[in-house]
Image (cartoon, rainbow, N blue to C red; front, side, top):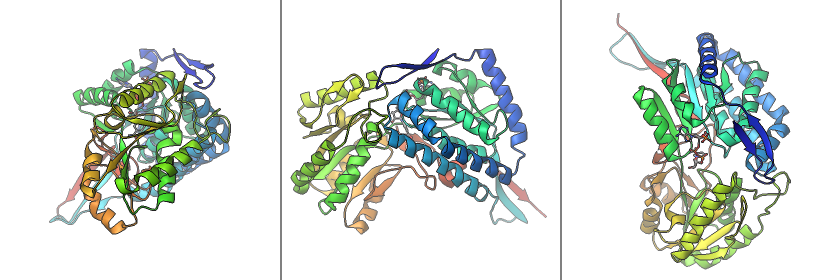
Length: 451
Ligand code: NAP
């Protein structure tokens, strides 16, 4: 049985009976049968349905947003924004997929040679709870448009969101089996992956989960895309515009109550502006309103589960024990964790070395560009980095020095349907979104015609 528990009220919200192995196989059969017809549909037909999915999302955004807030504690205004972004990703691929997947002519000795992009079949998506709708839609929109069909194994604590997502596609008119929610635990992921009709998997989540799914997929020679954790640095150079930088850094760390893979988790500040920057930063963090996730004015909700708040508490306490100075916060109450700021943070402390998945940030001073780059790259993760400076020419010159999937200048790292998203190192491999993402799960077929 899978259950959703409201982390703010502790109320048990919904229970879901897990699929038996037999039911699971029947669902995969249904997906496969759907694929045989779906792959023959035109881009125009798929676009029409995907635009309708966007409409369903907009029409029901209050219900969907409230479900997110109740299941995992996201403040309601941020949950509404999440649904609106899902509608955008549907509209974006409805419009762009045909062009992104058109045959690519390559001049050779042949009369004609080109690459065509053809769908593979059923793609498994294993997804996390932190953006329960967005993570799924950024997989589903490009992949269904590419002619694949999707099956979802969502995180166990957001199964109501998973059910509603599947209903979006049904209501929009997608054929039965085109997108299915599988109510299963991680123990049945292997059964899905070894099924002959399942051709590939994408997982967003932790390193252990990614490693396990990739190993199983590898055994069956099936492709994976992994979007794992991150420990992005926010680098504030001496000449940064402080007002806008502070605002962006606060948002980068504290939106979604800090539970984001691309959150700015390590704040690196030039020592000459440290005092002024920290004063402004603390002032803004103090103003973030904590409270009931269902309240429109709440910015900091609870963490999605109490054990996650406990993990964060341990990382902060250990860092303080190792010499970090607590400037703000540091207290936990059940699944709520206060917005917390530490300074005097060194590279060995958990707040620097490990991924922190909640509203806590450590500040480290640097003295030179070289030192900032070294600190930033001193991480197992490689998802993204933000650089804040007025010298944009210098920032662009420094961009190649960072071991990251993305460098954002004077902006927080964010996902955008138009841009590729993904990491290197233990942040994973492969890309989602953009023309790069839509081509991950297609057969790039070479066609060669000789006279
Ligand atoms: P998680 O425990 O890895 O869970 C993610 C998903 O994987 C859930 O559906 C989970 O199912 C499933 N799972 C867990 N262990 C598995 C296994 N051995 N085999 C197959 N499936 C397995 O991660 P989380 O704690 O929910 O999410 C936080 C992590 O995700 C953080 O590290 C964060 O940075 C990362 N994340 C990355 C991105 C990105 O785009 N790069 C985005 C968001 C989050 P159950 O719930 O049933 O265990």
